[in-house]
Length: 272
Image (cartoon, rainbow, N blue to C red):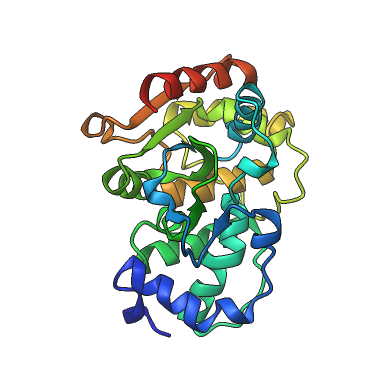
């Protein structure tokens, strides 16, 4: 394959199915019986389903909030969609590596994962938002679907323009609050190497960030992840918010997961 094969999202999907899918051992059907990449009778593209999609940077608390929301709505395992992390490993990385004529292999370092994701988004419009739209969901799935699979302005605008049945909710936190949260996480997925570069932060926050780093309240690993995310997705909330009625922003400073889940349920009741 080459980059020309990725002129459109559907061409990229066809390439993945034809050249990679059958050679990969993926647990998607076992873990997610109501989700398929092949479709068929009784299946509809995810873009046609009603969906609440959270968009937020690492350390914002989207997974915890989504878990609380599922419990509030009485959702079980059968209502679950693959996570961004899983689809990145199963689809995005193999396809991006094939396009670059690289060996297909896991990518574990978070900074490197961001770099491969950014490269892929330059070849396939919409990046991970496009990949989510390649999936089919069975008609027996209860709506609305719930996910936390997209982030950044490129992915959000792609989804907002193409999938009016999706309500995109961006969760935002002040940068230093997010760095503190990210520093306190005990997630083995958070492998990252980088330097103490604070240039991605607003100038008026860098002095305080340096003090927090020296005091051990934020970690070098958290800085590396946040810096790489800022390079990929920017550090500001979605700027084109006013153009889309299916975009919502929640400022969640001071809110716990249960309070965020309540606000998300209110959005569902008002819009879906």
